[in-house]
Length: 71
Image (cartoon, rainbow, N blue to C red):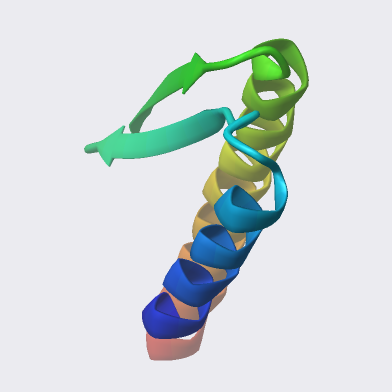
């Protein structure tokens, strides 16, 4: 998956003629840190925040189901 993502990013940079941006989501414990740069930063940061909220919700839901299954 990582190699496929890197290949997609390289193709996107080559096709965009240098017009690029990025967004990064880093989890430190339960706290997401969102960083973005470029002309489309607002949309990328919003997208990453939605992904952070969904991944946190899925973690909580799956953790509760696993805890209930063990008791």
